[in-house]
Amino acid sequence: MTTHWGWSNVSLFITNSTDPRPAAITFGVNSEGKNASDVWTAVTQSLSGATSIKSKISSQCAFSRCRVTHGTDGGDDIIFDQAFSQACTGALDVMPPNVALLVHKRTARGGRRGRGRFFIPWILPDTYVAPNGVIDATHLASLNTSFNVWFTELNTRGTPMALLPQPSDLSSTPTPINLTSLSCDPLVSTQRRRLHR
Image 1 (cartoon, rainbow, N blue to C red):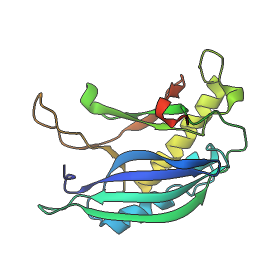
Image 2 (tube, rainbow, N blue to C red):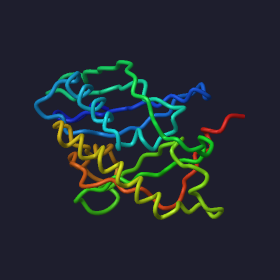
Image 3 (cartoon, one colour):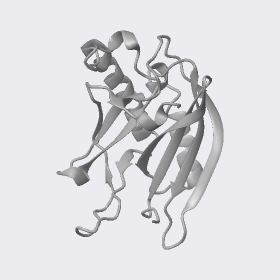
């Protein structure tokens, strides 16, 4: 599937020094008026704020690579994929990589087609997660603040985060739409594939 013209798909890779497999955060951005390398620069620089999400992810981790798939007017997508390094600075011991934070993508569009999600491992300290999987309310508020910092940085750099719908057999595929917010789920999520066997 080609990417809509004026929009880009982004994959941000996180590497943990104790884990051979990187994790990826995937999302869309509104990239009207920009080329693929412009988007790459804006996204990687959006992580540099001291209170952005890098401050919550374990210090054993670093953002290590960014891949931008950029839509064009009637042609093939342009891919800009390069390594970079942005160290994470979270100081507390975190839960195993199969225990992840679920982040909801919100838009002004109603229904399932108006929302999305992504998962981030290595960001939940075990001291802030109750036995029933509920994240401490104060820590959850701090996580939401950091995601809002990142969300705002993307907007400021002219690459607002967006929802890029996938094709559907039910009806015509809706057009992409900018997100209105990110929201961290108060309950931990699990990703069984991330646990080594």
